[in-house]
Length: 173
Image 1: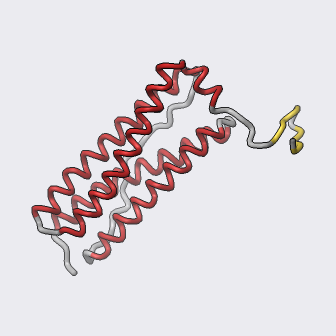
Image 2 (image 1 turned 135 degrees about the vertical axis):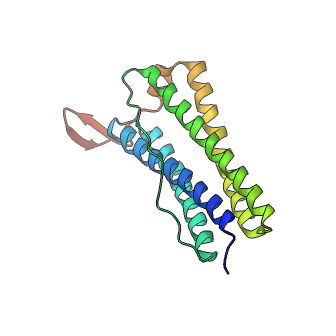
């Protein structure tokens, strides 16, 4: 099946946004893991896996349209936490990124409908719903930081997953 070039370009742009979000989520997963914020590490891991599934769905659809998925992604900068208040910047970044991704899916879905490509429109719709769900979760986290304070929020997300650390000595609890 040969796809409409406009649909392929729209899907490829969605792919670019999703790859950027996925790469950033993986980067924050590693960052929070190194600092022992295991609950945040786990959250970012789950969100990154979901983003990668959306990437796979887009790639599969582009390949079904006899095209080659692009490899491009936007650049991002990891915001390191210098103070507890910097966690708000992390959630703000993801709110902006996910909102941009959602907007791109809306544009792509409109292009797919205009080209009468219902399958691509459904892929965009499904992925857009998942992005909106992630966006709601990020907004809730940002609101929680605002309500409880950044230090309390980070303290809640730091624990040691069944290990007790004493001066570098790791023993099971």
